Amino acid sequence: MSDRPLPHPRDMEPAPALPSSDEPADRPATERRGRPANPHARAQILRAAAAAFMERGFSGTSIDDIASAIGVTKGSIYHQFENKSDLYFSVQEAATQAFHAAVQAEYRAENLPDSAPDDKLTRMALAHMRAMLADFPAAKVGVQGLERSLMRAAGEAERQRLQRYLQQRDDYEAMFTSVIAQGIAQGQFAPGKPALLTKGFLGVLNWANIWFDPHRPTSPQKIEDIAQTLAAFAVRGLRP
Image 1 (cartoon, rainbow, N blue to C red):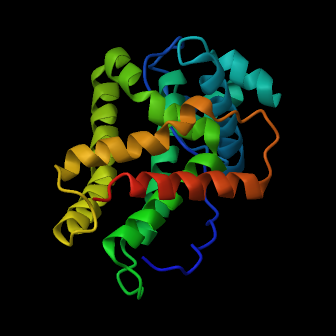
Image 2: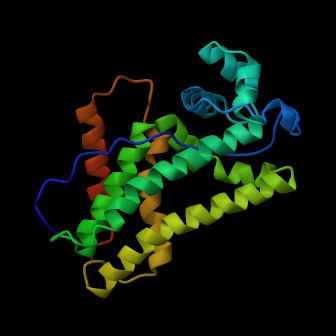
């Protein structure tokens, strides 16, 4: 594995989560049709929603809570999102896209001179951690909200949306599984079932969702130290 310093984080956008709503799911399409969404307002709402869902969960959060947090009306939120389920899924999907963008860049970096499986996996793990810590509330909703989503998906549209999310999750894990399998084949990692090892590997990284406190002042250097330490630790756990 190369001793070259790992690359610096990339700028990336928010994260996403789950279903079931305390607001009417069938708001008239005419209320939204023909009115272009404001991307800045949408991003602001997603950030506020992620923070609220992280603190109070899906069932404990209302549209009123989110509107109050950013000083807008409920109507402003319904202009951007159909209902609370739509908003929750949108947070989850945004997080998934941020993770994918960060990790895929490292996964596809075949032309790097130090692209051995162990080095590539370290870079992918670091990208995963940086994406998580860059937008922690959304990432936490995205990682922890999945099982609740499965249980609470109320309608057919929500179930279909959840299935699309699950497929995205599987595609994401497949990148890690592929690199772990290469590492096993080259003797860099201990023998094992790559798909199962991927679950454990990501579990180590995602455990930061339990203990990291986003309310505590943390310097950028400290966040980078956390990301680098956990990425290296997770890869060491795969070695023979």
